[in-house]
Structures are given as C-alpha cells and as structure tokens.
Image (cartoon, rainbow, N blue to C red; front, side, top):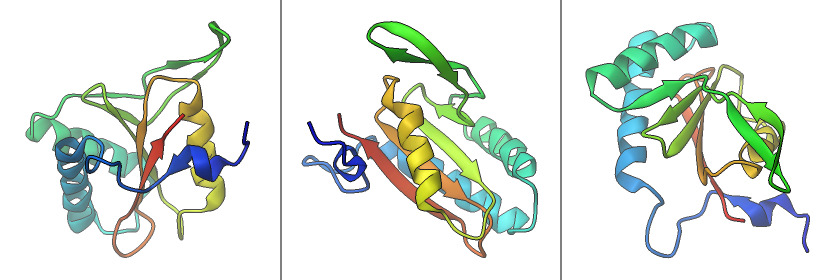
Amino acid sequence: MSTDKSAQMNTDKTRDGYLYEKLTYQIISCLYAVQNSLGSNHKESAYHKALEFEFQDREIPFTTETSLPVIYKDKRVGSYRPDFIVDDTVILEIKVAPHITKAMQSQVYYYVKGTRFKLVLLANFGTPKVTIKRLIYTI
C-alpha cells in the first residue's frame, strides 16, 4: 500500500466532472463575495462570520465548527472541527495566510482521512484575491 498522500488527496477532476460541482460553485461564489467586500486584512473570525451571513442569505445549508469523529478500525480515536460543513457534503476550511502551504494541505488530508467526507475546499483570505484549493480525498 502506498503512503504517498498525493495519490490519496488531489485537486484533479473526477472522471465524470467535478465532484459536487454545483454546490462548490455556490460556495466559491460566496467566498468571492466576502473577499470583494472585506478585502484581505481581517482576522479569520471576521471571514468566518461573513461567510455565515452569506450562506444564510443564499439559503445554503451549513453547520459551523461541528465536531466530527475520526474513526480508526471502527473506533473513535479523536475529533475534528472543520470551519464549515456545507450541505452535509463539502468541508470548507478557511485560512488567513500569505499563501496556502503544503502543511495546510496535509493537515486537511489528515482531518478528512478518518471521516466520510470526500471533498474539502481550502480557502485563503490572506492574499489580494481569495485563493481556493479543491482537495478530493480518494481512498
């Protein structure tokens, strides 16, 4: 078995198009709306609250900082609290940093590895234009 994370988490299209394409388009639209309004000089908590308002305004179902169990051999070994779970389908993690690092991407990989979720959007508001990484957990 390969331990290469790049084989397990990638940003490529699936064979049938993008995974959850319509929903991710809606989420990305919200990210851009918040970035266009607030710019890139705020704390993560400000972007988090603004996204809550944006999701509510657009009637996009979401939960925030919900504890998810991390399962190993059918046993709970920890928990993970993503910034958002959108429509019980997509995890959205937000950051405010100069750029999205490999460490951030690896952290998200380990978060979703023990959960049922397959798609994470990693959004960084710390740049002049919001940077979004679409990460698909494939194993």
